[in-house]
View 1 (tube, rainbow, N blue to C red):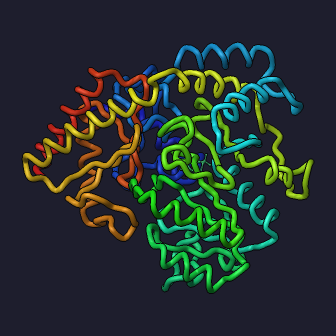
View 2 (view 1 turned 180 degrees about the vertical axis):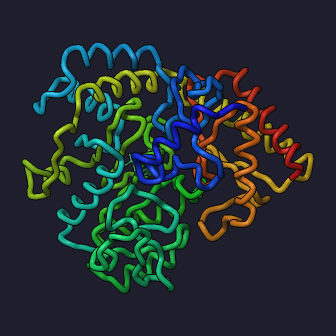
View 3 (view 1 turned 90 degrees about the vertical axis):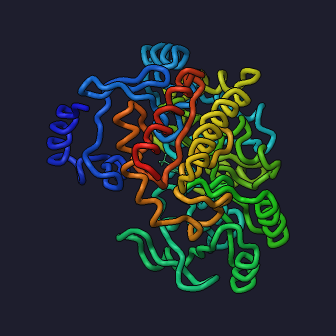
Length: 430
Ligand SMILES: Cc1ncc(COP(=O)(O)O)c(C=O)c1O
């Protein structure tokens, strides 16, 4: 496969951006080689600057649940942009998207739009602190909530000990407010709550952790978090930036039927434009400025072009059978590849929930925590990624990231992907 144009664009990009990219995982560091520069996308396919065509399972890391350039989304964006792209004042588009979400999502009553998932998580944490008057945060090893200072923290040496920062530039004082616990471990949560009695503002979790593999939690653990948070007057924050509107319109909250106190959204609600949001009960949201004392604002928040894209996309998601069809396609993809791998005795497995899937290089039937991931096995992701690229299938360039099936993937696309995966696994003889 010729990638000379991408390579020369990357050479230029390296002179312009740190690592040649505007978000680190795009740099192909964990799969080797240089990143592919995309020129256009249509439906389930993307074309790169060299003219290569790929079946896309990255889908911009999740937002593109309808695939690329869905006609309704394109139309909505073009119509709105021609009317004006930003006013810094309210527009009816914000009402429309909020109405669409709130009237179909029984777990939240009021919402505030921001411009990214990071902003959503950051603002939700501030709201939780402002609401409870407490400072400390519990988060879980393996969950990502954007590049928020107090959330870029990884586990320390023991249970309920304070974490260490996972990025330079995070003040120790912030780290000291964050407790990082293993997923799926009730005892660790109880112990931390005992040690930091009445100091914990929020338990933040990706209810479907999908940023370090797909670490599917038992519903029982999530229900336990709900009970503990209610008992201890702690805000339960579900970060549904990936799972929201993905595993169903009501996301993981609906999937597990658990009502968190606050939900952070992103990705799908923007139809491919930069949007995030946080939502909660009317009572908790009354603490947000200008109604309440928790300050949060944004020049481009509720941007009408992004709202238009989100409205067009979410209307499609509400069509009968939308999520059932996505799930069926994904289960066929995963089921067929896993059956092939098993018939050949390969040390390979795939997990999925709804239209999110993850490839894992072990035979384990469940992986619920980061320390259950076979790190050595994960080294096989790089050659698999390359073998799939050569066959015209694009996965996000990291084995710890999940893949997404979109409504644009046809049955024939799924057949094509199954063959590409099976042939790649055979070529690599695992
Ligand atoms: C669960 C979760 N929360 C927050 C974020 C941050 O969102 P953004 O990249 O839009 O800032 C991400 C991004 O992938 C995410 O997966």
